[in-house]
Amino acid sequence: MLNGLRVMFLASEADPLVKIGGLGDVAGSLPKALCRLPVEPGGKTIDLRLVIPFHGAIRRQAYSLGHAASFQVPYQGSVTTADVFSLDLDGLPVYLISGPLIPPEAPVYTSDAGVDGQKYTFFSLAALELARALGWAPHILHANDWHTALAIYALSLTREDDPFFKNTSTVLGLHNLPYLGIGAGPALEAFGLPSAIGSQLPKWAQQLPLPLGLLSADQIIAVSPTYAREILTPEFGSGLHKFLRTRADAITGILNGLDNQQWDPRQDASLAVQFDQETLNDRQGNKQALQNELGLEKDADQPLFSIVARMDYQKGLDLVRDALHAIADHPWQAVILGTGDPILEAAFRKLEADFPNQVRSAIRYDAPLSHRIYGGADSLLIPSRYEPCGLTQMIAMRYGCVPVARATGGLRDTIQDYSRSAQSTGFLFDDPTSDALATALVRVLQVFKDKGEWQRLQRIGMAQDFSWTHSARQYLAAYQSLVSTRSMDSKN
Ligand code: ADP
Image 1 (tube, rainbow, N blue to C red):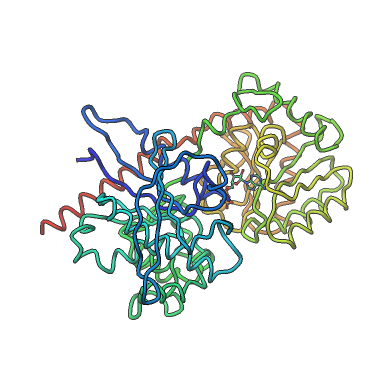
Image 2: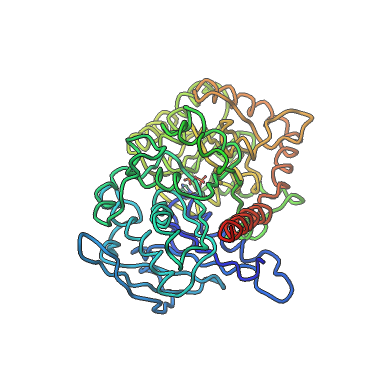
């Protein structure tokens, strides 16, 4: 039955074509993992095609492109044109949608919600038209976050009367609930998408892309089991928790995986020294190289804390400064890599000024430096207020960098809190406060003094299997179940 299962996977970003954050990691690696799943004898298991906007950042790279289709999308009582190009990414077919509403000079996300609303509403509707232009009706339309949620909503409005899409089931991947697509209202009107008046959605959400996707998707898959539960609560539900409870039967959580080839300390060319569990002592060379690069004292006995994160309120980074001041009497060093909110950026510059011999703030996006931090720092701080899944803790564990994280979302699902006997992989704390973070850091400092115990913790973390294999199978099972439910429904 699964032979030739057709999946259209929509995302706003996908590594290595273009990546801003974790969504890019997932859209780059989950499709590949799904395509790699064991092929049944005599047939192809899955025909997955990735569709993303033809962002300027992709145009500036030298990919060999084919022309896939050109067509028009109704817009403002007239039409706007979409030109679609195709490329092959190590065997994965990728379609890049371009058009006047996806300007080549624009970044992936702007600070103008109206502009992004137009861009992603166009992209979502053009993706549906692309399937039609290719004569390729997907069994599964898998959209992700607010940017592509309207593809699901638009499909739901016509699906039952549309012979082309009548066998298409929809999955909405939920990577970040609070980003609802606010400001897209005019775009919905321009593209003729009605509000969901009279639906279960609260009135304020009836013209917002993500809520409309949550309303109409056949299945909602949050990126960790804990986040799937958390979004049903007032603390994490972004005002939609009551509505989401009405959809609880359609909500599941599947943990994101990691691209184990991209993140592999045994063959990471960014590192001064490659290492694995057996050669963990060699890792010290990376710490030294990092301390040297940053102009910090080359001292193995001072724990080197680190942060690699988008500087956003979500990440709880405002808690770090007070927490580090609270442990100022202890020996430690810290490196912060991140960019985003100017207030947080300024706070970390100030932190460096507070501790000129101990702290380095690299206020930028720097992928090679992130590898050197994971491979050389002792511990990664992730004090997130909420964290749907989080990848940095998984990368850190794979690289022997012990995570210290708030017990929320995917952090709770992937990190085992420290205790001497258990199979611990890191340190968790409950409250999103600098006191709770400081208390956790004191625990870290204690364990770090015991080198044998610290290495035990590192090795258990490095031995965790965060590869996509298990999660990709869960996605395939979810797809399979939707396809069989739909075919049963259409027979009845
Ligand atoms: P989110 O998607 O919320 O940003 P994740 O933990 O899921 O957080 O993924 C973040 C990804 O982006 C990781 O691969 C991390 O290494 C990378 N990253 C974040 N900030 C930077 C930065 N300033 N420089 C390099 N890589 C970064």
